[in-house]
Image 1: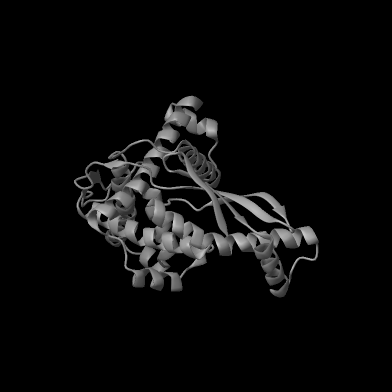
Image 2: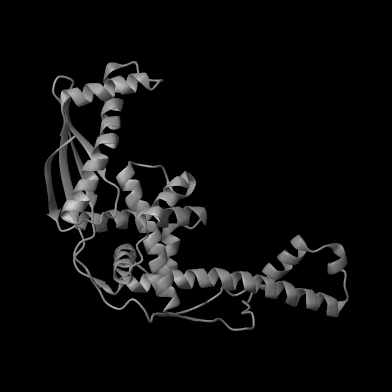
Length: 314
């Protein structure tokens, strides 16, 4: 695999063109045939062989680019086949985004209250009916009241734990406001569309109509889009900010730690593997940003909730 071109459309927007000659292409075609379950159609076989060649051959090229150009990739590469011919080989392109020049302000001292959702009396009654037997429910008035208080406290403890996790996420979100500098336009756009998809899925899961949502929020469609775009960009800046914190505080894992994580790769959690140098990059960044997030949280303040459970009116 040979590098033909590397450049940036704008800082952080990396574009690569690479090629393989006919000898390399024919080698992977034969490897694809020998692998079993090879495609019978000639065109399908060639496509599978090119995919194999890219995943096998691009990995060292990718590692070389990262080292030579001091890149910190933040997305997987997207590949595009530009030309293929069994007599000449193939040309392909790749696009990925790397950390652009950014400035990190403070990374500690954030504040966020822990705000558990109020508990409805009906929720308490349903919990009692589901998890407590007839003997508990048949107690006298004092016993029933004690049971309600016990169940209310149990629900409140659960909701406080949930609220704490949300508050910790909010601390990391606040970090995004401290990350300044231009971001690649396509990276920002891609994150906006991903955030929009997540929003749509939440609306569907909860059976909420978009028009109803706008009415409750007192927003127009345009105001919603502007708000969602700003939220998506700050989330992106938060994720990039964690890389900056990791670099500043020295949270990068050792080679041994990365190898151990790679050996225990969980596809259900982390998705499918791509190619070696990219998988290593992802594991390394995951460990580093996890440590960075813990650092930001431990050096910020979570305002605790009230001791007494907060009740809502039915």
